Length: 450
Image (cartoon, rainbow, N blue to C red):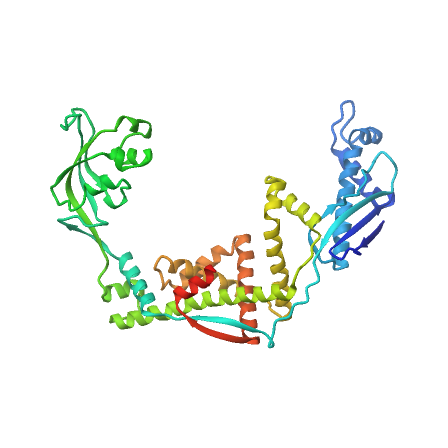
């Protein structure tokens, strides 16, 4: 067997494998013998069919399997041994001639290989990068306090309707003269939230309504979709076309959602066991939590600026576009060439950043250990729980959550990337000159949208 590799094109190479009969004969004969032992051929006892018959029946397919396995093993072995920086998978060469297995060996297999571009980008003490410190102001804290109070609130019964209130009442279908329709729809405790009625004329009919009031409105006009109307009238969706007239609605209950009072009971719900006694201490604890969350936003932006600098230093990066598109198409066969052409440029941009990041990680000797992955998983869990107002989740619960998360391979891969980002960002932040800027969260959000 002879294996050669020509990478004169720099961004791609051609790997050629010439297979002689001696390279595959032993494995080919063994595969045939194994098949013969198990083959049930009419007229012969198991394992006693003539080898010549076996070769005629399955010889070509066995030879194909044997050659494919051999070529694959030797090809990837060569790539590993020669440390070829390959992108994606080897693709059959465009000039690969059809192999006629009816002819005697040698057989020649050729593959096109896309190669990693040479990237020599360094970021260090001579570079200056911005770092945005997001201030925790009263507005942020107020919003968080209101969120916690809102999530822990409750419904109270009231006498008069205000925006956002929920109504319950008796619903009656009316005839053309405005009288209750005999045999028509009659529902008790029909729920209406006027704020979500999209028809302005119908919505106005509920303005200033009080307990016990009776109004006439048209549900068909009030609810745009058949699904909404069917749910409100408690009928099948296929029947809603029958209900286009007016209904009477008498209010029997008005419920208003009221936020929780800012008191020790709320403090304990948000931070169990913290023994927070007053609003000032509550706000201080919220500010502390927000500072940690906003620091992650700042670090995310910093790494984005690292990426921008690295890409500027790298300049235009060349790839073997023809091979890369074939690889992308092979990975998205169900989407076709149009998809590849539409998304190729963005895909290459992300690939370039991945390669640059890997180079920087090697330069800064970033190594991700198991504990780093667990820490990334725990931080992700904390952020997810915080979105639901759960800011003081017990460590035991977090550990169990992390354990379950790490059971899925795709989660592990994403968390490894997250751990690399965290450690690389910290290493570069310590190495470059930082131009620190204090900004509000609104200013930061505008910056991220730019």
